[in-house]
Length: 235
Image (tube, rainbow, N blue to C red; front, side, top):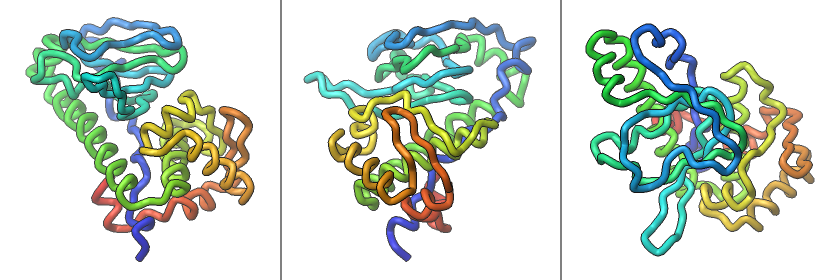
């Protein structure tokens, strides 16, 4: 078994976190973010969790010297801000990559609702567990995959998550820049561009700027390395 075969895709988001169903039990505030607008910044006081209803965000950590590490690209169905629980303040930034619709859940209200609606506690735990699994899968990808395999793995994860949400797995619009993708995958943006071009030349994908067409998801799976039993435990 090759190391590439042990790295799992980013597990698709599920529909288990149903904000609308919780509305009678949990007050919510809906917000719309413009492209480039921050949802929160590092150091900002923590007072709420955020459910992504539409759009893409970029989350990142910022070092004292200004260096930034992209940690994820939350999309529809994701819960954001969980890493600030217990810290009192957000430890990173979250910024909109396109027009986003966000549902704000005041954390004190979430705690109260968990006492009255036990199912909510399980839903929150599942959402936080999914984030931990994505982080583990990414670390395994960075440790074991070649540059081209990392890019294929990243695209495969986006495609599978789109399919889980009822969208096409054969067409992606990359809201994030090549620089952001490279930062997330520990690659230079030139390397990301070369990997995309190589996958395009091999017929695995067809790239036109931010648009990526995936004729055959199975070929993209093969380019990334098919998930195996070890990978299933990582993602």
